[in-house]
Length: 390
Image (cartoon, rainbow, N blue to C red; front, side, top):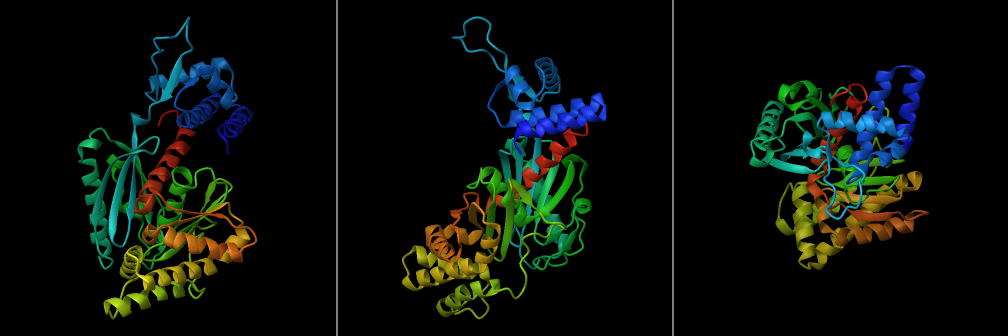
């Protein structure tokens, strides 16, 4: 939804309610959405974009200046006459945290109100780590991020968390087969901290999709399928310009026995034959095949191509049903670049009535943490519509 149409809808709602304070809050929230999308703005421009009168826009800018959410810009030295007052959104006024809880790492991003990362912290973990120790590692990573000099002024208003498995609206992990003792955890409660704002939780692949479609290679796409290719496979859906979470938050979850597991078998077989490992992991196998293929190994390139085509075979039914504008390949194995994306795109194009644009993620393994920070920003947006202050 465009800022203009969003603002129009909220203003109408406020007028119909007959509640002036509600109308002011909704107009302020609409103004903030517009301001974040522009480098600078004047009062008449703001009034036009959110569909209010100029006096109302003047009142809004005065309010946001008082609250520290706007900065008035100094007119240029070459200005003639009385220049229009110009303002910019003060993104540094507050911050959020984005946390990626994975099998092998905990990654934390501190970001400003435009989603720009100001500090990061990574803590290595193992897939076998018990839940209590993994939660301790999360707290350690958050503390380490906030202790960095770049985060000296960071006081998080909200913390977004991405984790594997199905997550309900309250932040409870309904089911997860990737992390030990993880099913049933209430992450909102477990990670609650008065200094970190409200905790909001989402599925890691859905949040990676949010990151890619709002700040990655698929910005501007109305419909996109994000395919995570890492130590497991997963799908994220971006439909009509919004993240599609599903009725119970489980959109994109893979169904056992639908053929996805066979894709990895080619990588595992190659790894076992070349490395002599009895029980290779998907991650080790993928990394070894990508490295060998990039070095020119013909067998590894053939294996990677077969893997890419098998992925396309499995994804084709989803693409045919959804008819997306683009498909984004993310996760660790996306580092293979064109060695993966080109055969994948060719195979997908041969199977589907309309071939979508195939792109490789530019956010890589940072995508879930970045998406988690954007989830936290979404929470702030919703809160702004209910309260006159952030």
